[in-house]
Length: 193
Image (cartoon, one colour):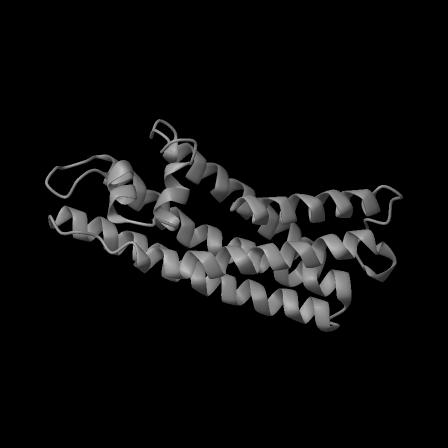
């Protein structure tokens, strides 16, 4: 299997597992304007966790939904990590940006697994009528999202400088896709995801 095929397979897995997680969360009410999955990733207090999963004194079917989403995320994580590794190779022939993208993807994947474990620990605490610790997920989620933003900014830089890329995306408009991606990632980072 060549690098481009590996990237395509990983991209397909990333899209499919992301769609599956979206379907799992369908029907679970948002907390304000924020999706329940994001609330569980970066809660500031147990109250935010309760807003999604219910109070420790009650039983909630949403906890099973949330746990299921984390288990599907176990399959999503290797897909997006494996997507960034071949893309890093194809774009940079393993020069420093390609190696950096690959390394950051591995670290982000590790942080994502730790975040999932923190969310599952919170669900277990609630099921045992205990107060969940919001930092168990958040302390891993913030680095994960930061690393993914850095990876995407590097990818945007490559699209803007397409002559350095080995990807077959050498169309005149790829520069502007890179600009839009870079601006979008910076805007998301500024508004807090």
